[in-house]
Image 1 (tube, rainbow, N blue to C red):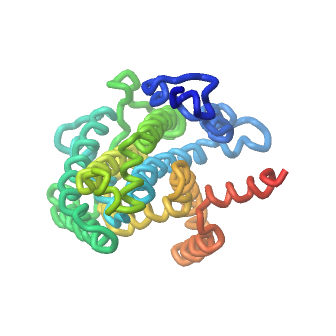
Image 2 (image 1 turned 135 degrees about the vertical axis):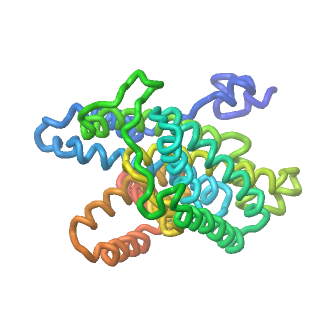
Length: 351
């Protein structure tokens, strides 16, 4: 009797190729959130919930989606490989600077050109930095990524004749889809509608791509390395090569987020290369829940909204934000996704 006949899914016999292509059922809440994001711009005039669809709120959600991509990419290292990086801002910021330099020196105005330059720059940095960093683990890895990222931050700050120093590089409104969508007169309308859908599409592509990577044999090998490096070596996994590959993939997708951030923010400054911005990416991931795939997405969106409204509340917003974040970590040690899972289990699990 074949192996498939013994399995719980024996009602439908699958070949190995079919089994590899089988996609797990998407949770209902993920489908609901995706549909809500798609129709959100058309709900602006709806009573009671219309304020959620205002241009300001849609732009905030766009920021959240960008940070969600960055946190999701970072979690390929933290959650799946077990490596804590304090230098991921270098990939985010270098991609944004690549877009700014294209504008300044080559007068490029295409978003696709920005994405290409951003991906190439972050990929090159990740390949170089990864070759050095992944030879070490734990605190040594974290300190190395921090030190290397600070070198790039210092270069962006000191080479002011290239990067404009603390003044940064201006990123004008780009054209989309290879020029099919031109530069609009109403920038707010563009960012809250056209660019919102553009970022949403890129977000879904990145989410699906990273999900496939995490669920692939490569992703399973990363989890084996995370759980027990010695046993992973015994079964034939080349630990260094897998860690380096994960570092490069993570850096490249973080660069996609940085490129999307540049036109949205309109300005690229050395602040997004600093280690404190790397700390934000780490906290977004932990806040959402780094032990799940979707947790970092929730963390990126939640952190952006939280920071925005805390800044509006008081001039001492750093202190208030710190207190709130510490409280959230203490109350929800498994992150937002873990707390939601606990609530669902408590409500429906004992029936």
